[in-house]
Image (cartoon, rainbow, N blue to C red; front, side, top):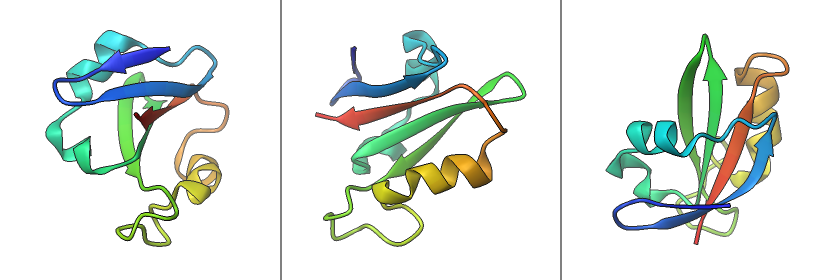
Length: 90
């Protein structure tokens, strides 16, 4: 599945528990996320939260926002068993 913003196209590479909603994603998405290679969207208290991550090889990547740390982020910062998705910038 793919979604297009004004400038970029993203591919949904993981859609856990059918979390991805195109309309909600586009309403929450801002140009702030354009710098990231991946966007993780999760639901807390019924609201979509977005968090950006860099590809591990990206010079901007730090320990906190490397894509290899996504599982740790979901485990430690998201509600247990919550719906989430991962979008990769094409």
